[in-house]
Length: 109
Image (cartoon, rainbow, N blue to C red; front, side):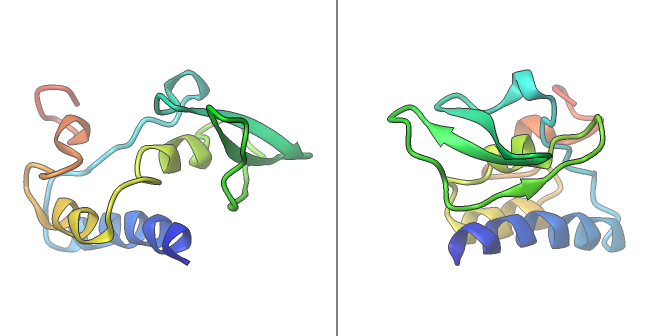
């Protein structure tokens, strides 16, 4: 359940940030930017999951039918983060504590 909550929080956080006029957080979405420790794998036609270094698959699948972005890559950057910290990142003007490097228009955005 927490896996799904993390993804929903990212989506709702984008809407919240827009309403509150906060800088946009843009997570990496290209296949080559999957977070270290994961690999993006196609489990069915146009359905992707994350594979851990030990070979196990995360129990969540995303359907990505277009060329870009890969939502599963975005998800790899929040999959292991605690929900309270994700909430704070969505409410923060600088993306703290977890998304500082992904604030659009910031030093690394």
